[in-house]
Image (cartoon, rainbow, N blue to C red; front, side, top):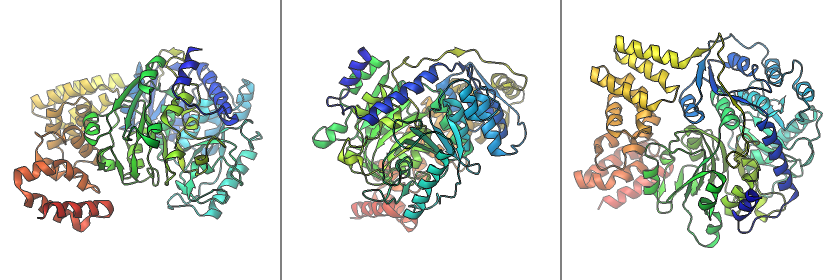
Length: 620
């Protein structure tokens, strides 16, 4: 009763309990019930390839399951830091996958104790499928499909994947074919799926698609692909859809985060004024209410300086709510406009609600707003792919009211049919697992069992111990880098810092050790050692440059020449603005004009326009 009361108070004017919203709550309650009955083994298993990944998930059962990740950084350490397992194991390859489709189906069935089809396995334990996961045997995101079908109790279905993901906007005829193919695929399951409230209310599509499509039933085109899939040809919703795409390793990471991580740390950044229509989309009384749900809530002031100060060392949040304005190549803070490069680095995996026009126009583009968030480790994302107008978004307070009542996160972020006139634009994309919950702390508790030792598991802690001994006995840049890389898989930042200091004291810390240690030094905000490590690297990566700017870019003591040498393409102007006053004060206006003149020949778009404005400002 207390939880219900608090949920109501999160929104002064809560929306009416439509049939869709009631159905979403019931679906979330089913997800919670299943999740509670699936004990988790306190371990993470790292695999080298898809065959080993499938083999490991096939070891799941209704009485035990655990996260399985591809052994690729930075995702492994990011996940491990949050999950904090008793053991991290690593496996050697078991070979290659034969028939991919059959192997995937067999893996999901085995995870539910079956030897036949997935449907038969679920029928045997009397578990009605919670949804359908659709993928293709030729799409890399199929790794997420296996995990979410096996982890949630869903059917696994296949359809063709030739949907022109590289196109800016999918043409209407092709969108119609996509919708029909989804219906055809669902028809083969034998489940009722035509309306909300029947047997299939959740779809997860794991494949590359264009973010925007033209569709005949839409009021105004283009619209979001994940809001078209799940509708019929006259535009009526019959299911809610989550969309996952990307590499095998990243798709698996997104699925495992959704299945195994708690979400009890929230971070808010609201750039909107507390007046007029903007006020409704602010944080309201969320920060006072969420602690009553056992959730830690932090809010950052909406100015650019406040953001830059908050992101030094990275953001530690399970769920991020961020309101802004802008396009795919910039976002507005309360006082200034800035580039995607200033989106915070994430110390742990995060789910994201990003109220901002156009952020997911091109989510595969690593330099766009949405692409940058995803590259940081976001595994669930609510954002727009076209201008939807402000009211097309569900206010944060209303989303919170719903999620605290067990409505899944992605579902809670959509208006229901008939709720509101702005529920019609269909321009909000929902990336991730549509069944993922963001519930009150301890409301969906799971039994946690000790780690399991197997003959084909290698203990990463033991490997790290051996690597450290090797580095101590045979100190070199290579041996210390190898030890740090292994320790990173355990999420032990303080130990990495100690190794870095030992390597420097021994005089063997070179570019390899520096590159391996930098992320931990960044997270610990060990600025002096980070700068020392950065100076030892050659040709720093984009991530390393991001760490440099976010940790030390606004500090008056950071070498101004080092920052000039690491202006980040393609948005150099937004970094230059940060150091402009210092640069002019120390070297005069000609210094900044020379930099601008060197950048302009290759500048494009907003970067070019802003550089020209800056030149006009200083060329007096």
